[in-house]
Length: 345
Image (cartoon, rainbow, N blue to C red; front, top):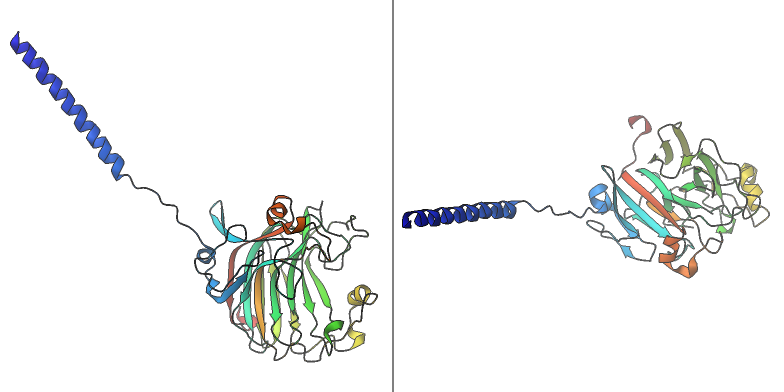
């Protein structure tokens, strides 16, 4: 009898030992499992040219150090499927730069260059949102500028602004570019000439604040990718626009010799829009020759509560974001460097 009890006790201890050893092994396995740490992805990880830029955000925040920099709600990264995108988002009303009524979350190039020296900017992007409110008779309503050349001398005008614009109720929006003259004399005669890429140009408007023109058949939808290249070489600006399913468009504009130095050369598009409103000037013969320039890229929202009568919710950014009063542009690629001879591209 004593032998059976002893045997049973021994078996019990063996079983307890086995269970303890098994649990210890399982515990060790759990402890050695790697813990996945979510790495923060910054805009500078996606488009590594950020060291060449400074930024102004839609809430007035400025930074000239963009490596490992982001600000949620304005400048950050979103991953879509396997692609990281840099998001530029800005309300209709926020804190603007001193000479503008429009808010922006936009990069500004640190370097300055003259057209004779040149430079090149590229971007691959999609516009995900433009303001849903505005005045259809105001040219800047429902639009955002996604790339610029800006002068840093003289009148500080803009030889290039690349726009995306979509009227409410339309499926397709328009991509177009504007050239602003470097006005001879007083800058109160300055004006923009607009050229269509896909869809309408700047001059196509509604007949009343709430009526919209006919939708273009060859436009670009929200969320549809397109690319641009701005190449200034020996004073000539070459523009190339590409998008899958759309015709590639190319344009050139001399920045050293004006096309608009005489009143007789002013385009009808310009006369029709400006003549009844104010003086229409001419451009200096040498255009932007010898004048310091710099590139800009991002989301320069053209909707505001003043000229376009867009809804601003008294500047409350959260309410604007909730109710469609903002612009949002996503870039997945871009480059910045010296201009190149066009046939070497």
